[in-house]
Amino acid sequence: MNLEEYKGVFIFAEQVDNKISGIAFELVGKAKDLAADLNTTVTAVLLGSGITEKANELAEYGADRVIVVDDPALETYMTEPYTHALSSVINEFKPEIMLVGATPIGRDLGPSVSARVATGLTADCTKLDIGDFPLKPVPGKEDEQKHNQLLMTRPAFGGNTIATIACPNNRPQMATVRPGVMQKKPRVAGATCEVVSYNPGFEKNSKYVEILEVVKAIKDTVDIMDAKILVSGGRGVGSPENFKILEDLAKAIGGEVSCSRAVVDAGWKPKDLQVGQTGKTVRPQVYIACGISGAIQHLAGMEESDLIIAINKDETAPIFDVADIGIVGDLNKIVPALTKEIEAFVAAKK
Image (tube, rainbow, N blue to C red; front, side, top):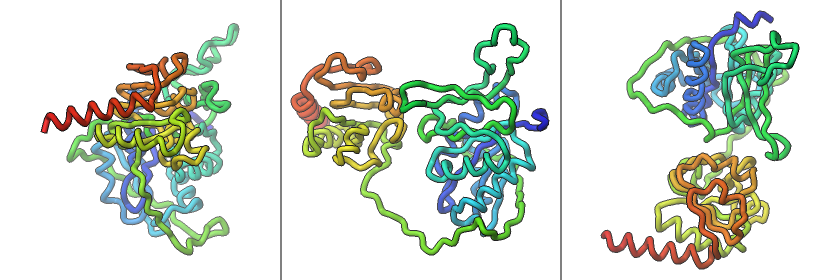
């Protein structure tokens, strides 16, 4: 493999029902930072049927080029045609870096594509940088240290340690990235870019599946990743009934309720509301942690919040290490009192 042939930072622009997913714009934003370090460009790969007109949406968030594979075989996500399409794009255009969102689709597609193009894949990354690998030169082997490598960081061993991984000998360097971890760039309305149409051709084979029916579930929960204010509860809330006081606070301040893994495991709240390494990564303006101890797995999902307020009766709880404001006490007394004060303040302003 001639590594010098591979240039540019590529991202897979996931779309569902011809609507580009938010993770695509987040990946473009991070790709711009990586491309700046490498003095190269950002290319988004958009796969689907009847989606060519969506290409400029990616330009508005910073893509320098969009490669569109528009074919009826890609109307609904299936592993084989999407793997064929993306791996063909990689083999034809030879990107140095290929980023995929760690969504249900991306977690299926990424490994399939990396195997098809014979490269490595670091899954569920929370940080990406350009740097040297090994991070520190090995004494006596300083000349073997490689520069301008993609350093892919992810939690390992249940979140108890952080691993930084590189793929120095194969291209592209591939990673799946957790939604909500990277930040998209400000949108530039009306921006355009080069749009390249490419189609490798599709023939059904034994790897194709037959879709008999698509059933769309209607969820009665909000997407906590979009919330500006989150009131989050942990095991310390005490019971599912006690979440009522958190819901009252969230309503008073115009926020939403979320929770820790312990709450989901106990069956108190659905997994869609879980924040943390095995849940969702959130970046609200305000994150109020109630009865959450602050295990590293939970912190990984919320520590980038603008303002963190922690309420816990255990003054040694790790959550206080990341909190901007810490309140030691009984949440069953503090939260209702806080809600009452906020409601009174709002009423006085009307």
